[in-house]
Structure formats: structure tokens, C-alpha cells
Image (cartoon, rainbow over all chains, first blue to last red; front, side):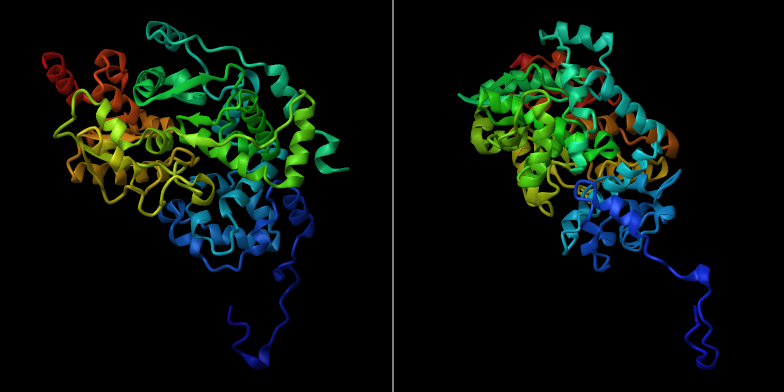
Length: 177
Length: 294
């Protein structure tokens, strides 16, 4: 990147080198709950120093993810094997951010976009499915049912799934359209 | 008696019933009464379901809060994940626009979120409502000589502006609760580190766990005390995996705080589930023997 160093040879950047802000992507993200937080990021990197996923992996960097959001680099964030799933959800970034960006929440909004496109790791979708079927994220085994009885604990009750399913259905009212 | 709406969540009742048993047995001894919320669903979890659709996540959390509003009771949670979801939902629903959106969904099931109840992690209820002195007085068998390392976990403390539990950079609550049992809390270098459970990768959580378990071993702690069932599963089953992977024996039994409190209050050892753990806290067996001969 020493394009600027040879003053006489100031080549124009090639068309495919120009970063163009993808406003459609940013608009879609902004419609998520707390989806517009990255706009306040000034790239200080306070989130990076205290991020365990960054410490333990070269692939994950919350400041870079925020920058990609600002530019709208959808392809680098939304796709199979997205780096977003490396986030440990520890909230250190949120504690450290001087701008209240809550990088972990931006990452969760991006995961919502992944889910909208049907791209979710199996381990994650299995838990989501269990919740949508039973109202719990942990399946009750017969061994635990027996153990509960032995301890004199009440059996776990059925969750009114009709209520849960009614709440899950997306609606026109959500987008205000 | 101070009464709370009990929100046990999924993991404790459906996977670790002994933790629920310990809570139900120990809290009345501290003057705290629990009332069940029979129609409650998963909070829903702040990692997986929240990743699918945050607005649906918020709506279901709001429904759970409504159940406590019906009873006019503040919620007490025993899982840091449930605390995170319900506290954050309560915080987000202070925003009028978002609350209107969620209430439109709740109207489908004839409910309305009003914002009338607080969400308290069980640790803060014990600290603020019962007090450390009451814990100390409830102890029948002091856990003298027991060296207890602490893993706070993330969602008890952070985001601190929403959780309002303790200083996330220098928390005190767990040390004080362990001291109240007569045991000795020991802080290890990696006390602040995340358990890694939510990270969808093999290497990152394995290395994190190895670092935590190594420092706990360095300070020669007898057990690792924690307050979140997700961290517990990571340090129990997960410890077996990590041990195999690195060819190391960490031998650090995890113990959920209320099981330890139950033991100190003289509640039967065999009802506390210690023998069902992968990494069994054998040292606690000795304490029980002392107790039965006392």
C-alpha cells in the first residue's frame, strides 16, 4: 500500500479496489433491535484488548467487525463459517466501549441477519429448535424426571406453547409497515 | 418472610435438579420464600435464541416478566443466563417505542408488559435481603479449611450498567458468601475469564478452560465454586474433554454455591448430587462425615 509514496506515479485505484459503503446492508442491520449501534464506533479498539476470543484466536477482532459494519462489507460478515460465531458473549467489549456501541449486541444483530438467511451452525439451531418445540432449551430426560421425584421436587409442567408460538410469529406491525 | 417469584429456567430444573433442591432447602433458612411461576418458559437464553431473532426473544422474555407482574412479585433467578435475559429485557423495554412493539405482540395473547417488577440474581437476594450475617448464622457445619476458588462467570456481572450486581473489575460478593460458610476463598489469576461455553469453536474455549483450570490448580484450591449452571457444565463435562485433549489432570471439582451452602446448613450430602458429577468433589464427603459425627 505505498501508492502514495511515489508522487509522480499516483495511480488511480482500480475500480475493484474501491470500498463502497453498502447502505442496503446497513439499513437492514439498523432495523434490528439495537441494530444501529456501530454507527457510534470511532475505532479506538478498547474492545479488542479485553476480548477473550481475540486473545485466543487470530481470526476474531471486534474493532474490525465494527469497521466492516461501518463500510457495509456484508460478504465478510454474513456467510457460511462466519467469524461472528467465535464471540464468547462475555460482554467485556460492552464494558470497555467509551461510545456505548455494545459490540456484542451488534454481533447479535448480525447473527439475526445470518438466521434470516438460514445460515446457523448446527449446535445453535438444535437448541433453537428445542426451544421452539418445547419452550425449554434443555430437553428433560426420564432420568432427571425420576431424580426430581426422588428429591420431592414437583414434575416440570408443560409450557403453554400456543402462547409462545403466537409471540414468535413475525408480523407486519413489527416493521411498522 | 421476603417473597419472590422463582424463575428456575431450563438448565437447573431439567439437568441439575439437585441445584434446585439445594435452593429450595436453603432459602427458607435465610428468611426468603419462593413462589413458583408455573407457566414460565425458557427466559429465552441470551446466546442461541437471541441470535435468531432479538425481537421474538424480547417478546418471550416480556411474557415471563408479565407472569411475575400478575403476582406482584420481583423475580429471583438462579442462572446467570436467565438473569442476563430478563434484566436486559427489562432494560430494553424502558424504551417506549420498543415497549409498544413488544406489547403489540403480547396483545395477541391478551397480555401487557407494564414494567412493574425487578429481576434479581439469587446471589444478590442473599446478599441484600438476607445478608451475610444470616448466611453465617444458618451454617451448622463450618466448612473450615476448605479452599474455594471462585469463577464468577460473565453474565452475573456484565453488562454492569444493566446487571447492577457488583464491580465487574473487582467483585466481592462470592468471596463474602464463601467466607460466611467458614471456608477460605482463594482468587486465582484467571478469575475474570469467561468459561467459553457460548463460543462456537473447539480451540478457543478449550484453551480458555485450560488456562482457568491451570491457575485454579496453581493456587491449590479444593473446589471451584460457581453460580451459573452453564459455567458448571463447562467445568464438569467440559473439564473431562479439556483434560483428555491436553493430557492433563486438573482434578478441579466444580460446585454450585447453593449446594455448598446446603451442605454447610446440614442438608443430606446424598441429596446434593455431588456423586452425579463427572468431577466429584470427594473432599466434601469428609465434611459430611464430620457433620454426621458432630
